[in-house]
Image (cartoon, rainbow, N blue to C red; front, side):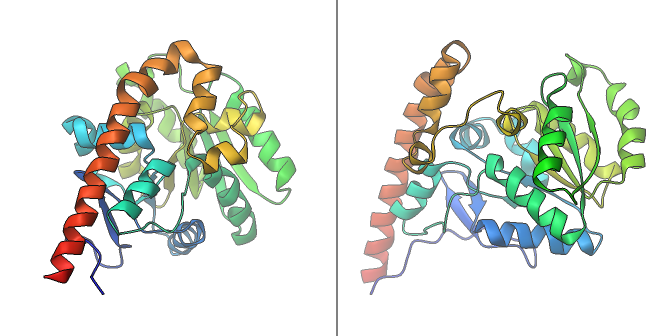
Length: 273
């Protein structure tokens, strides 16, 4: 029986296995393993950063050096996108499942309630973080929500914003901080905040606050499973998302799947030789 294709990558002690995807990678993690890792580290006073690459973020990691360097400090990377899962299977290094940021905000809220961990919601459109906090509090009555904040338009160009925000975050002492600003703004902000809040776990979750509140309807489960959530999103915002999905997303997905299939064939041949 041939061995699966494996590309060696540098890893820190205790880090989950890395699965290579083109010139980048994600961790081999289930949802439960991700939640357990965050909860265990948080209770030990150790913070971290979860990046959830979907197809668009993986494209940025592979094609944009500045973004790849920005994300070098991530602690966990989970596959937020069925094309990444399919690619891992084609190259015979199968990921166990999709672990999406939009699912993590709900699953991690439930885990935080059980473990006694607190959360802070940062980002979204004006008022959305507060509304999302109310919804999550209703779903998880014992959950401790330490606070919310909405960065002003253009905050990423204002060097005074992070020093202004830090006192609020320090006072909140949140164990988990969800940052919902979209890539790369949320990653830039997380990178700036992490050195000042080493015990906190940061998760960039894009539009997820609006999914929680119902302001934006998430795709039905069947479309999610079929990898067609992007089609549902594009139908909701064709002007904003059409170019991302049609011009950039589909060609990159084809490249990812073709390269992964070739890697899988190569691994099979190497295993037989």
